[in-house]
Length: 116
Length: 116
DNA sequence: ACATCATGTCGTATATTTGCGACATACGAC
DNA sequence: GTCGTATGTCGCAAATATACGACATGATGT
Image 1 (tube, rainbow over the protein chains, first blue to last red):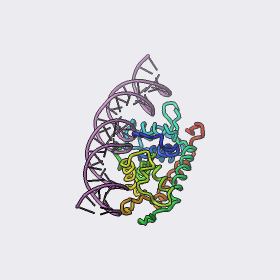
Image 2 (image 1 turned 90 degrees about the vertical axis):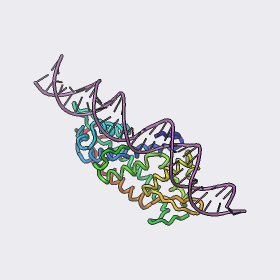
Image 3 (image 1 turned 90 degrees about the horizontal axis):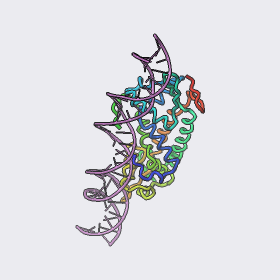
Image 4 (image 1 turned 120 degrees about the horizontal axis):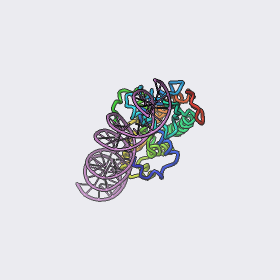
């Protein structure tokens, strides 16, 4: 991303944007929703469900795994992916805090009406 | 992003990922927080607060404006940016729904323990 | 050991993002 | 009108992301 001056931003801002980037692709959103829809963890069936090649899905999985949003357990021949619900809960709280901070001000009206 | 088969994903997944991409950069998170911190809307002071050139900040503002997350009112010589709190509230609800869906399953334990 | 199946990794082509300088535009003061 | 200020737009270079074929790895069955 050419984050020239990354150090100039808050840790909170950087983490929030990293997680947001993880969700910044419909395939990754779909992967998380798919894992959530199955009560039991699923392996490479994920690739079969998405309109992408195994390679691409694998890369998306690695990105989600890099943030520890999902976990992968090797079960013999297949790999068992599942959501890290604890971390997802924390991330949810952080996003909520951000949105509450952003919506509490209530500066703009529905149409326009800037309070300047 | 080379969204080869974008049509293959849900509208919900696409919108969620678009908003996530808007938050996928610390500068844009910082911009939203900055606008939220000021009770009154601020113009190009945003550029002065960030370690980026006016040009770059302007581009980030355009990206946020493209999603209608922020609004810009021209006030003579300066432009008055403010948050679209209504939309932000809706987006917050959508994110919350997504995270609740993702965390309700509770598949993985804290350490590992896949239920496969 | 060997063949087979499920995954992951590497290399690569294309598309997008990021950042900024240079220019264009628009308003207000004179 | 002219000048100075505040923004936005264009164009370019470098960094990332995206997608996938080809190959490597690792476990299972015979």
